[in-house]
Image (cartoon, rainbow, N blue to C red; front, top):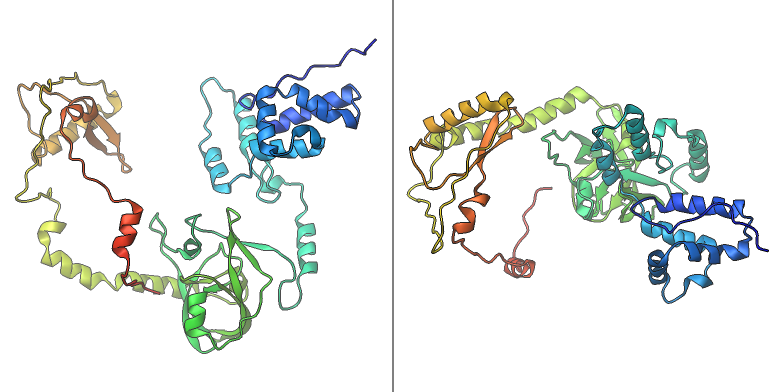
Length: 421
C-alpha cells in the first residue's frame, strides 16, 4: 500500500506567486515526502501544469524537459519568469509604491522591504546598508587581483549615463533638469584638456577621437579595465596610456583609459582622489561660461522686443479654419464639477484668459466643451478643453504623411556633420 503524500502542490500560476516561491514549496514537498533525486524531475513536470509544461518545452526546444536535470529545469524557469532586473526600472517601481487604501502600516512596510534591491549583492528584500555581504572581503579580493600599476582582475567601473542604448550616451553631460556641468582644465603631457567632473565614473577616460587628435604619439597599451553602464551594458575599451598630469602646482603620473567613440573627456574618481580640486575655481569657471552670452542675449532682447515681452504672441496674417464633416451634429456638454479647493483659481485664470483675448464670453452656443484644469509645477492652474468628446470627431483632419526613418536617412545622405568637442 502506497504511503499517503504529505501536503499538495498546485499548478504554477505566475499571476499568483513568483517562480522562486513556487520552487521553494516544491523543494519542501520533496523533503516532506522523501522523494529521491531521480524522481524529482518527473514530480516537477507532473505538478507544474500543462501551461507551464508547454512553455518549458518551448524554452528547451529541440530538447524535451524529461531529458534535463531538476536544476536545469529550475534555472530555465527562473530565467524566463524572473529575468535580470534593470536598476532604473526597479528604482521606478520602488519610488512609485504608495500605501494603498485599507493597507496597514505593517503591510506597507513589508511590501516596501520586498521591493528594496541591494546594489551590492543585487538581491531583493534589503538595502545595501543592511547587506550581510562583507565589504572588506570584496576589497581584499580586489586588492589581491590588481597589480601595482594596472588592474589584473575584471572589475567593472559603473559609469552613470542618461541614455541606455548608445555608446555615445556615456559621454552625455547635459542634465535634463538644468543642472550645470562642472569642468576643470588639466594639462596632460603638455596638452591642455577640458575635462568634465563625473563622480559616477570610476576611472578617468577620453574618447578615441580625442586620443587621435591630441595623444596619438603616446603608445596605447591593452587594458584589463572593463567598463559598463549601470544597466550592465559593456563599453568598448580601446586601451590605456600613461600620462603626466598637471593641475596647478600638482603633478602626477596617471593612467588614462581610452574608449571608443566621440565625446567629452571625463575626470573620474581615481583622479579626484589624486588631485586637490579647487572647487571655487570650478564654480567660477562655470559661471563665466554661462554668463559669457549675456551680451548676446541682451542684443536679441532689444532687437526683438515683441518676442520677449509678456504679452500673448500672435501669428500674422494666418487664421485657423476648422472644417466640419457633412452632417455633423453639434455637441453640447454640461460643465463638470471641480474641487472647491481650486475653484477660485479656475475663475481667476478664466478672467486672465478673457482679458488677454484668448477667450470671450457668449450668451448662446450650439457647441460646448467641458474644461480640464491642470495643476502646473508652480501650483497655478492651466485650463484645457476636452475637445475629444465634442468637436474633434466631427472635424476633417489634415492627414500629412510623416516620413519613415529610411526616407530621412536618404535625405541626410552626403551631408556634413558639425559638432563641438
